[in-house]
Length: 243
Ligand SMILES: Nc1ncnc2c1ncn2[C@@H]1O[C@H](COP(=O)(O)OP(=O)(O)OP(=O)(O)O)[C@@H](O)[C@H]1O
Ligand SMILES: [Mg+2]
Image (cartoon, rainbow, N blue to C red):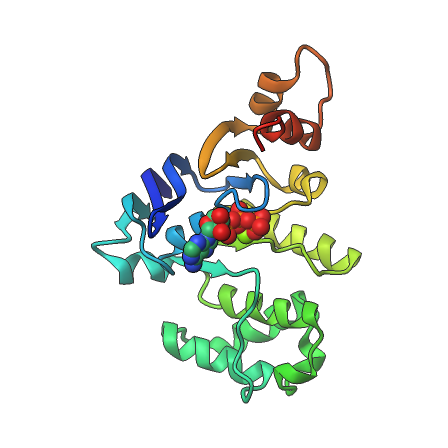
């Protein structure tokens, strides 16, 4: 579903992401973790075609993002860490707009349950200025889900949500995965990530330190102990005096 080969991203002379290869299949949720500046957002933006990769190939649902970007982007949704909304469109108008851009038929029937699932249905006629930060995030998520993407990239989807919002967001992500979506998400909330992700990829200074199922990565860093959690794995994998 998502196939990444030799992905690299440079900003001028600075290499933010180097030689990254991985695949995410239907139903899998890959957690992208790493210290601040490790290259998570840069990777997600390249995977979603928001910024061009410097090297490597990204295939989304079999379509090459560089040579067949429209087909690839039709299949995916990208949820940025800072939602960008239109100041003068209401919640409902945002969804109408997105439906037109993506050619979603019968979108009214789809929009209402999404607004209810994300608990912003009572704000349907409000402008973004009248929404809280978490509500703006939820609107951006409703917009991204409207066209029924099979591949989803979330940058820090749980940050800024209240505890119930976090639980709902986890449930939404897991529901899409069960329905066969391939999902990549970045987060620093490792105890929450553990509950959502089937796989994890640890990045440090733009490079892959470890990748696999959570159990596989845990086994590599567990030093023989049982029940080593992701936070401990993260610290063992990315810590060290060279940081
Ligand atoms: N537009 C840009 N121009 C130049 N350098 C950039 C740009 N965007 C990111 N970088 C650099 O690339 C590196 C990776 O940044 P990125 O935002 O991908 O990290 P991140 O893993 O998402 O970090 P965080 O956990 O803080 O969100 C950082 O050193 C950052 O300063
Ligand atoms: Mg980031």
